[in-house]
Image (cartoon, rainbow, N blue to C red; front, side, top):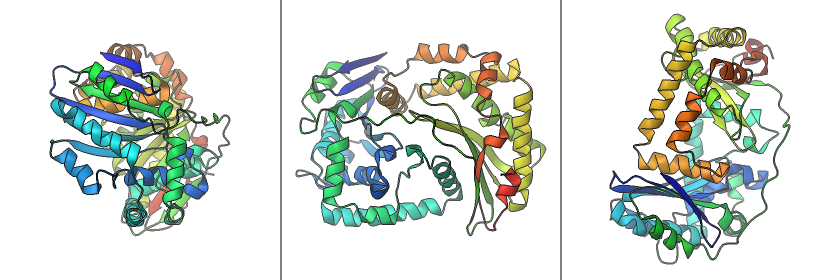
Length: 417
């Protein structure tokens, strides 16, 4: 069962007890990410996440990691477009010790300039690693270009040039402005005592401001389809197509999830069957989507030989035209529904997965969805509701595209843009 509390310090807590396990996952979620950055400090959210592990007055970087290791815990963090999360998984008996480390990091990190200079180099290597991965690079270029008129297009990692301008004072100001109590959500899943968790966090984060000015909603964002080719030393071409789609609050969410799965979420999906099984053009092709507070997108990705890019695009167009012209079958709908329900049920068995989905939903939507709500949501989807959702993705002329290959490819001509 999921429960919520708002503490006297303004921090919100979402908890899901799983008494059948002997572990717990704890995440401290902060409502800040790439969308909160200006061009001059691009990448500062991610840089800050790294620096939170580099020392406090009572723990240096080694002791932060060793204090978790010696109790058998697993600790990490992640930065996204709209949220940053610091999390740990541990045995239930060591939850408080794990929380002590995380809260010390968020309350007392020093942002030592020498450590910053060292970690800046580490992040630059991380950027290079992403640029060497054709799939990551293609996706990043596509989404940044699609949303170049929106905060959603901001880069999470930034660039070596923007990182160079971020010093101790800049980061300290960013943390002061963005890490505030009513932008923090604590998510806990596993075996724990809810009263003890809430009592512990009641006295935390007193050195932070209570609130910050919220970002204005972005409405009617200018979107013009575009297509770009990027040349890299690779043998295979990576192709990505995307179109704006649902946001987090869209009532068509469950229908869209099922539609996405029908199109490219499994080996029986339409894209996989057409592009791989029938045409033999790609080893891997799949679809996915990402929903943010104000916007989102639907994406199609494939790895193909450079001389098969045109055929793959034509095959994708075929499937989108078929989707536009005919309804999905009841058999497809039922199969996709059962796949997604099973995937959700499997995730219920992981404390880390439950902590993550509850924390993100609670932070960004104000609500974590329980088992019955999710099952009811999938069960409510009909052929007619999928038909309503498909209007978001079946118009090929609205798609943007990017391709990464060892040669320049006329992607604009192939997309007829």
